[in-house]
Image (cartoon, rainbow, N blue to C red; front, top):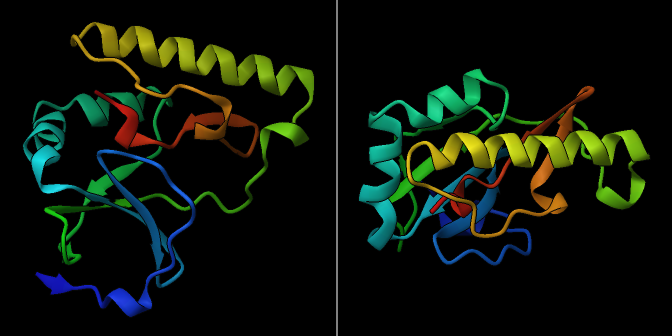
Length: 139
């Protein structure tokens, strides 16, 4: 495993009890706290994450071979090349984002899971398609 030098990362403001979103080498990553590693690994092993990605509900995410001091797991997210924020969206985009969150919640419910902070700031548009980007909010 390659140790990511802490002085090379850039962390946006992210309040997440399960981990930390950060940028390294111009790519988005999420470090998972040790207490939640088994939970998130299990989501990958059971195919839940891949199923959500395949349905277009969740950003493509994979387990990386990297390590960040103080964390038990580092995930690599797909880069969304253009970020727009909720205050920039038109009404149909809000509707699409809301339907995405509802559809994601329905799929999670089938596995006795939920979102702990489902809100518009956790949705990005990849082209014209909304995608949920906060894997750490799955509980």
